Image (cartoon, rainbow, N blue to C red):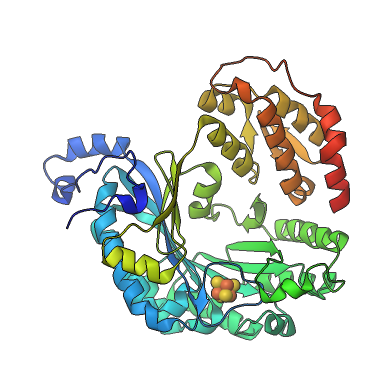
Length: 452
Ligand code: SF4
């Protein structure tokens, strides 16, 4: 079969390397292989499963309900995509695999296992790779979980969302909290030692007590990882009617809920490592960290995104076009762009500041060969307001800073833009542009005040 490199590479730069003879890895050429392994890069693989049993009221992800008859073609397409594409990843070692959606568990354990097996057969999935599947409590059985665990899945992300059954119902979730508890129990019985639960706060009519109760009941499940997402009301979702509604918690209430989560989870041993993510030591999501720390990842399936060799790719967000494209050799790439140095520097700032690993002047210089004086000025301003702090030469947001991170990161990027002429010009000092303080008052501070 001819590789269709256009699917993910958009006809662009990477060479179409041949699949390495795997026997060589175990045989006489071991020395050469070891040498080669050191050159190989790590890669995450994301597989999008865009099927759901029904559509939740808040959901703006690319996922469809009532399209189960498309699953079979989709599965054929995914398997073919893996078979064709994975061999081209000869220079990569796959250290994370993530099945997201949609609802992978609704798609069925058997199909997920087949795709994982195909990936293992055709690519270099490392022993010990983090292999995650998102599951919803209503669409997974103990037997399926056991089969997934035996097949190599070692991490689950369970969509719990709330401990309040009335809230779950209003969100269009198909499970109650007791069902979520049972799913976590079943996962433990099946052998899973790394479980994450997703929670949402800032829901219509939700009060602080309700959120506190959800947090404590989630902690009682003893997951290794907890994600807490603030509700954002997106156009096109059922909840959109609540936009600007007095039933939504106001900014103060939302801020309280967020800071309560940070504080309480920390006391129970879940350290914040990203704006919305908390984990026990060593249980941070290795896959998601790739997104935030600039790692490379390959996305397969409708609406999946990739970042490889300095290029971003997006696959069409359309199940039928994806399946047809893969099965009949048409391009499924909808977007493809090579990031400039300036854009890469912007991503470094924007994504790393979402994490507790933060940014450093030294690192910024080493990667992008430019200084960050203006950005440092802005960070110092944040520091005086209690929004940022520095440790060992790295800057990161405090919990209050994370709360304001969209606004604060916007201000950091404004400074980066002002310093734009310095990209690729080592250590030139900024001599033009506005005074950062003036800009802060003109734009940034107002925005912050408006929010909280
Ligand atoms: S299960 Fe997840 S992906 Fe599916 S509709 Fe609900 S929130 Fe969206």
